Length: 220
Ligand SMILES: C[S@@+](CC[C@H](N)C(=O)[O-])C[C@H]1O[C@@H](n2cnc3c(N)ncnc32)[C@H](O)[C@@H]1O
Image 1 (cartoon, rainbow, N blue to C red):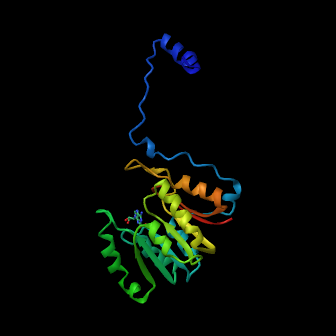
Image 2 (image 1 turned 90 degrees about the vertical axis):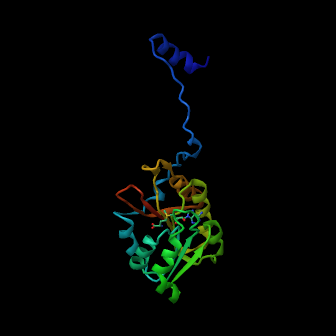
């Protein structure tokens, strides 16, 4: 009998309590580990925005941006209108039945900008596509794929050498998970670990009415 059983369970049983051992939920292995806490220096110069659309116009115009995870191009459209990049790379595998129609949709939606070369589609898995970019070639990368811990951690690591000295690594879904579907996310853990290990700091945090915030990081 361990100490806890002797000092807590036994007296409760004597009082008539029934001790029930709960089985962990089937998806417990997918639950994110609690993220490590950041230090004050990681958020000292972080700006707060009411939405990611309010943050986009603060990004210097004429840059080179990559959106990783595009779907139907709704946020790509916002990036083009509000951040006014010279070049926007759209990276997506469009590999699932839910998102596959997005490829045709995006190709048609941005046809004029694709023809001019302002928009370039790089279809493929993020971990393959990110390896096709030149070092120090991007002003901003916006990560918005599965939000799983391992993939997000790998995407952050792959993005780092691609960023110009003052480049920003940003992304969506800086939150614990999707409250509607119950799917946990590992974005907070991956981002905090990345900041601590690689000395990046928060540049901006964008609120969202649904709690799916966007982060933006710069080198510390
Ligand atoms: C949440 S949606 C992107 C939404 C978009 N950024 C927006 O705000 O409008 C996620 C997209 O990521 C893509 N995706 C998921 N896993 C991926 C991976 N490993 N590599 C590339 N794309 C991926 C999906 O095909 C899907 O289109």
